[in-house]
Length: 116
Image (cartoon, rainbow, N blue to C red):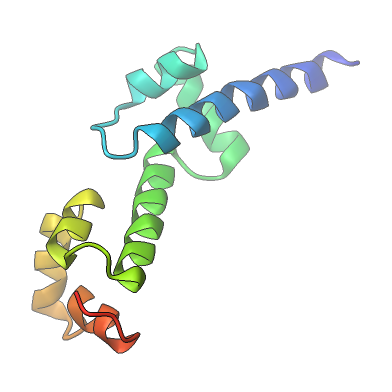
């Protein structure tokens, strides 16, 4: 096996560890240093490797995962909208969005027949 393929495979295994760790810690305050530690890399090298292999930064991945979870929670209606927003880290963003758009999470969840 050539060295480049071995390195890529090693990086993929390290990032897989990060993905599994993220799934269990999505509600935690996450920082680059902690994610790099999980991947056993320096923060600088982790950031460059992650972005090169995933096409987005780790922060963008966390944001996307939290928003996806929030969308599912809004559709199922199992949690109140403010709690869904807090879990997604969107308290301030939701407040700002309300000033610009008539579409709110409550209206979205109501439009699919779910009571918040």
